[in-house]
Image 1 (cartoon, rainbow over the protein chains, first blue to last red):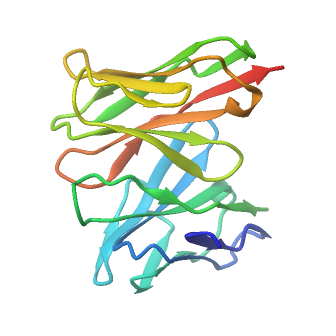
Image 2: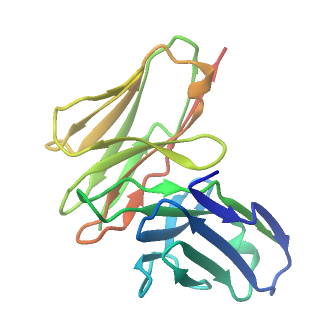
Length: 115
Length: 111
C-alpha cells in the first residue's frame, strides 16, 4: 500500500463545480503539503500544514482552500473550479523530527481537468 | 527572493552515455538541497546535500554541492532507458520549511 494516497487519481469536471481532492498518509508525518504541477512551471506550493491546527498559504493559494481533518488527512478544495486550475496536483508529507529539512514524500498525484 | 534554475531543460542521450544535470540556486539562508526523480507519477527522493564537496552516490547516480558557487550537479553514468525521467532539485526557502522546486530537467535515454 502507498504511504501517501491521493484520491481521486483522475477527475474531469466543469467550470463552476466544487471539487475536493483528498490525501491520506500512513507515514506518521506531521507536515503535509499541496502542490500543483504545470508544464514548464514545475511544482508550486498551494498550501501547507505543519500540524492539525496550523494551516499556511503557499505561493498560489487563491481559488483554493484546505482542511487538515487529522494528522493523517489533508484535503484540498476548489470552491468554484475554473479552466486554468487544470493541472496535476500532488500531496506531500515530511517529518519534523530528527534533523531539519527532511525529504518530502509524494503521493501519485491527481490529474484534474476542468472544462 | 529565493530561486532555483535547472539546466538543461531537456536532454536526449543514448544508453551508455554519461549525463550531468545542473541546479543553480539563490537562497539567503542555505540549509540543504534535494534531488528528486519523477517518472510518470510521484517525485521520488534521491539525495540530500548539506555540505560542499561531499559526493553522495547511489549506484550510477552521484551528486555534489558547491556552496561557494551556489550550484549542484547530478551525474548519471552508463545511462539506461529506465533513467528516463524528469529530475528536480529543491531546497527549503529561507526562514521556513517550505520547499522551492526547480522546473526540472527532462532526460530521455534512447535504446
